[in-house]
Length: 182
Image (cartoon, rainbow, N blue to C red; front, side, top):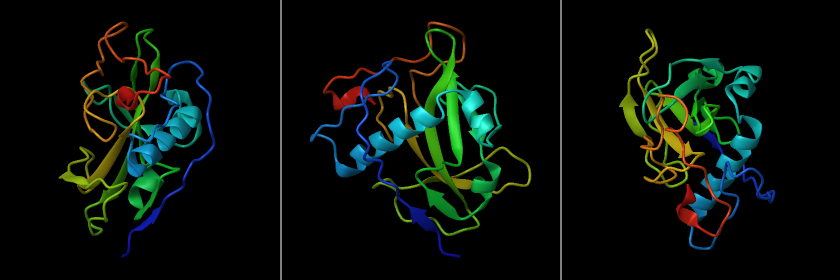
């Protein structure tokens, strides 16, 4: 089976609002990083809270895990062989400093029964990795951080993410000309 990758460039300019996502793109970012920032902005607008994910058909698939957050999965998208940047297979949430669960990352996944896809936004797929779900084969995945990740926008783990209550989770992003914000 051929894996289809649909890349939707989200070019709508966004104004800084509540400090949740870095809205500024700079020429210091690669084209792939700029696209990842646009995806992060769009996903944050549409799926800011777990309730938004549930309303869109995602189901909670894991408790909050240190460095990863809670996983909400669209199982229909998860089981197909397509990748669509406008519809990630997994949304990850964790508590912010106000103890409100907020979107921290999105993941694009493909089951290992399909061939490993070509790089996504210049990123090699991580895996194969176990899903921890009985009957579901391991997956290949690529992560885009929506919240501040000191390890970079494509890092799987975020050392800023904790699940232990208010004040210990996420750094807020700034709306300044700083590409290190994600």
